[in-house]
Amino acid sequence: MALSSAMRTELTQHLKDLHLPTIRECYAEQADKARKEDLAHERYLLELARRESEVRRANRIARLLRESRLPLEKNLETFDRKRLPARVHQQVEVLLDGSFLDRHENVLAFGNPGSGKTHLLCAIGQELIVRYGRKVHFTPCNLLVQELLIAKRDLRLARVLKRLAAHDAIVIDDIGYVQQNREEMEVLFALLADRYERGSVILTSNLPFSKWESIFKDPMTTAAAIDRLVHHSVILELNLASYRLEASKKGKESKS
Image (cartoon, rainbow, N blue to C red; front, side):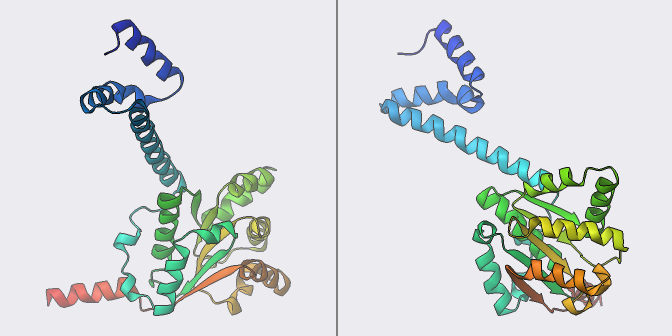
């Protein structure tokens, strides 16, 4: 038997108070379906709960993607995984199960400019959000350093580090691409030290470890930074030709 108008109004209000918008929108339609198909009450309730859960998850994933600041065009669908060396391909498959986040392991991608480091790590970051609902934050290294430096100046560094600590992974793009001064590198080291064995760092670099003293300015700080990153890490060696250069050459050849 269908609800009376008064009961329908009361139910709608209860669902509104309980913040169940999807159930509020579809319960009447599902009730008609349940009556026609003679479904059990529990089956009807299950369908309502399932729809509410699905919409909430989709909304949460959309919010996490938006808040991550990841460039969404850099995803697995647009990445040519055939270019990857066999070892790296296997490593990526393992990383996509997301368990490295639970172990607070880092992912370090090295390679030539244009080799696809940023694209690959951004794609992995998006999969961690979409598949598992994990919190990921993307930032170019130079912007991150400036944010931390301003926070230190304003006596807010601890607060910013705490906010970043809420993320399962921080993707730092192009560490060492632009040489910074000692004060700027000190705040970067503070972040790496704060996340050591507490949260994953995912980063790209054109510089091998042997040249990182140019980033951290002295041997002891450099060694300490590398030690914290490498202790629990997966290292991706992307010694590939520039994807952009290859695409440019193909474009020219197709025109000729």
